[in-house]
Image (tube, rainbow, N blue to C red; front, side, top):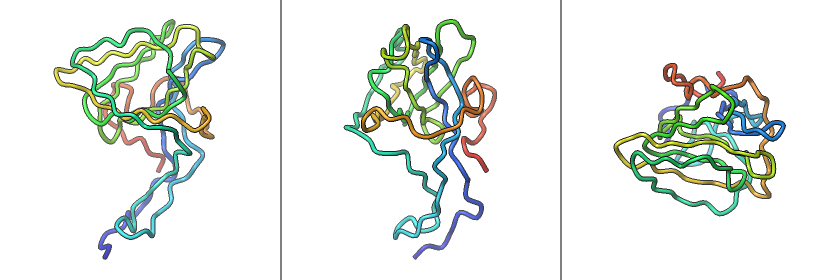
Length: 168
């Protein structure tokens, strides 16, 4: 029996995206078009959910401490959910940097595949402990409907404090 409900559910999800324009990778803050809905399902009644779209085969990565992933393209269009640790993502030719901490603000979207970006992005894992992440490709390489809010990471991943990645 549910005793608590989210009193003011968020409207939409903000997510930092590594995308591409004119053959160059970019870091952008997106607002997903799909709204949050309040669940009536047993076990999560009153919780807010947002659909991220159809997905492919999910993998779980364990990345060593102080690892430099180098400059690379996304292997496929995918969600990456960092569950622990930290990652620093940058793109050539830009001063924008995304600081990702595993946990509630650890979800990003990555779409700078070799088809759309010449160089890709640089990912570094500076922590003293392993970083873990779920890699979740989208079905058919589809990019979810979204609105670009601005260049650079969303506020919770900008390195300038910890804000919620939700549109209220």
